[in-house]
Length: 219
Image 1: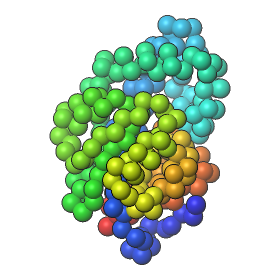
Image 2 (image 1 turned 135 degrees about the vertical axis):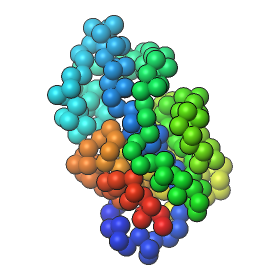
Image 3 (image 1 turned 90 degrees about the horizontal axis):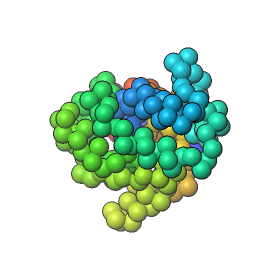
């Protein structure tokens, strides 16, 4: 996919639906998720994530991160289940990305917004209530972290839309891969879980360096 410079956004078609990822895109979840992982890792004698490891891990795909941490594929369901059970303990630490609330308010005036997340629907709902974010018509929860392409297909079907009518805004390599499978355009943000370098390598349609740039993209 070709990246279109933001200054040319006025020539692009208008998207009928804009889908936002949650963790790392709207919510600054990474520090808390590392704490949660380390708690579970300690319990199961797995390798923990140190502060110095974070920049390197942000430059890796999910499968590469799993390999680096020496986590067996069969351990993943257990780690995710236990991690989600610990999220309640850290929910007050997770804040909105700086500037994202005003951007969402602005975008919601002329765009239909929904959320697609690997988090639980209840967690996202509580986060939105706590931080007074009321700009989304729906929250879709896909608890299988590698199943977002299936969820995207369901969203297209429900809203009777073609892939080219939808934009997904997200922060991870796996989101780009899911969008490519479905044919949906993806805007990758650089303030989340994956670094700009690895996002660019996967060739998203757009790379966004600050929340405010989303307004320019969708103006």
